[in-house]
Image (cartoon, rainbow, N blue to C red; front, side):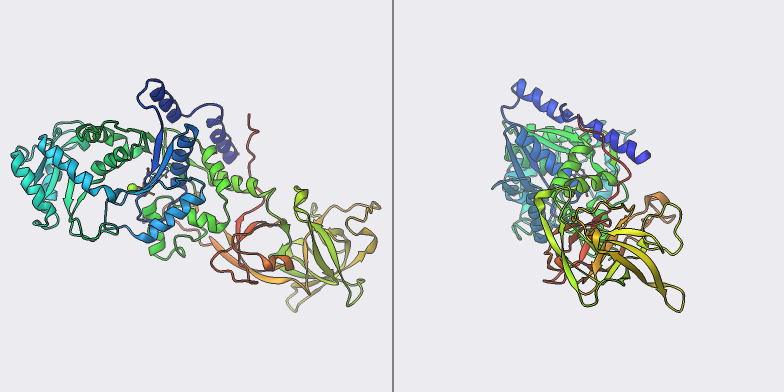
Length: 566
Ligand code: ATP
Ligand code: MG
């Protein structure tokens, strides 16, 4: 199968015994004495929630720091006042901690370095490496040239240093309107790399900043700010995604010309993309704003907050990132790899209880009226340490509608007239008949039970082929259960003809399930296996004490198996 092959390829790409290319580069740096320690960072822009792609970056940076006995910083890249919010800062802190990337007290804000950035800009001007320009945005684009044409120098490029210093100071003092003045690095308008053609390093923006308030009306551009942030914090290896590869010469130029004694080194790796979902903050933001999903943590999304709410564990995401591997080539990971990871993680951990998602009544006609008993049922047959629980049983039960058929196909092993099955953890029952409504729909199944066949009684008289789950009608609880499908149906094409995303109309279905009594006491984030129906987690937002709402994390069956680890 195609999926199976992809998963195997992905797993094999990442042989845990061999070092990835980043570790190899770091090993060389340490050997050659370029650095005598390792210090990494994760630098999110607080303009949205983190997603599974960021998890890769977080765990990579944190993992490298840990592996080399170094330090790891969380740094908010909050140099653009327009899109940033404290709500996002708080969400990011929570997500990074939850993923297990411990930054201790090493949390920083790029905006705390605005003074240093300003001083470095002044230094560049003094060295003749930066100048104030008043070309319009259109002129700048026109002068920049393109891949085939060299750029044209700005008429202001040779402005005297003193004048540049005065104008830059006036920019800072608010003497110019937004968009009328910029500070540009003075590098090379003929460079084949467009990023080196006198890039803008400061702009005027009369905007309130969430951290510095109204102190500044000039703000540094990303390509100038980011290397300074790294250098100020003593970062050794600045790991970023591939789209910054062409920016590396500028990164190196900034740390060199700003005269940082121990300049950091930028290394690029491929972004993580995932099939059938939306990754990319901008796109997720649009889904949230357009109301396609119900907030940043809608369980159909792959933000960290959504994955947590859905019932994913940090361990499952850590393993997913590991299996996806670190590489220099862009590729897309299969969503089913993520599902595989949560299933493997929960199998031994999650209690296995019974819930009926599509109920059909079952009456045991020979079970004494008014009687009930408690059955002792193990919590997880794969993990004895999880013990057992008491489950009530009586004459009237509910079973899954699909576990009964009037005219079954050949291989059907569940209930049909005349057939005997085991009720999980209880007795053998034989179907004796069924009732229908006026339209011929089956509304109740009748059967008889054999008291000799009680589970755990050692009965060996005969065997049955099928085992089905059930809940006791008198004592079961009712709970909404949400079943999810992929948000985007990639098989039908990711985009519609008009360029909009092709949403799967069935991405969310809510059913009212009947669940065994113990499940009604479940608390937010508790995870269970509902026997035969999948793994489920109690929704942290919509549940109340005694009224859980369950989200299906993943179904039980996968279409692939990972090869055994070497
Ligand atoms: P998006 O691409 O989703 O808009 P971004 O790159 O704008 O995200 P930032 O907050 O700037 O988001 O990113 C913080 C760090 O996370 C950066 O170092 C960035 O390279 C990294 N990162 C972002 N997306 C991914 C991804 N899909 N895979 C791996 N790393 C990523
Ligand atoms: Mg970004």
